Length: 158
Ligand SMILES: [Zn+2]
Image (cartoon, rainbow, N blue to C red; front, side, top):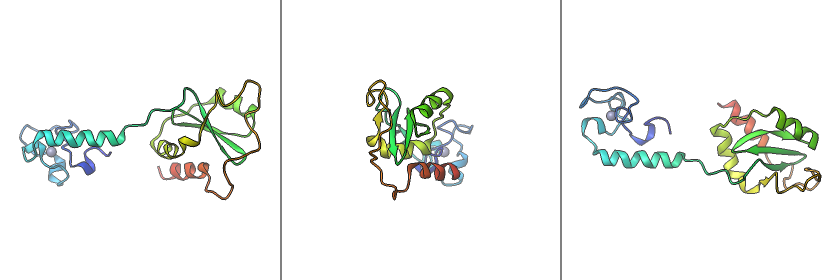
């Protein structure tokens, strides 16, 4: 949610801007505030919309106890807590990845991941100790637009 933005929320009420009591906030002058600042909208209505806006933003809980992976062709994409850690093709690369990982949460990645999370497998339990992470059976056909490609697109549009 852009602050106030599409919800007609009042920037003064949200304390995004300092307006004197009873004065219209800047968003009101742009007709983007429904007027909670000047009493044109009941405060309770404003609060309801604020809650609605916030609930749409709320992130789903990460459904795994640790990192999870998603196979895509030859690659395995590693994800932890909605953060993309990287793509690996071997167990060696996987170890290296965990040594140098510095994943940061971002909303585009979250949006993409939340659509495919049901296809992910937990790294810890999906893999018996010592057994290879990668096997040849792939859930993903090559013709599909790769998840990685989407990530790159999302990053490019940031
Ligand atoms: Zn206002």
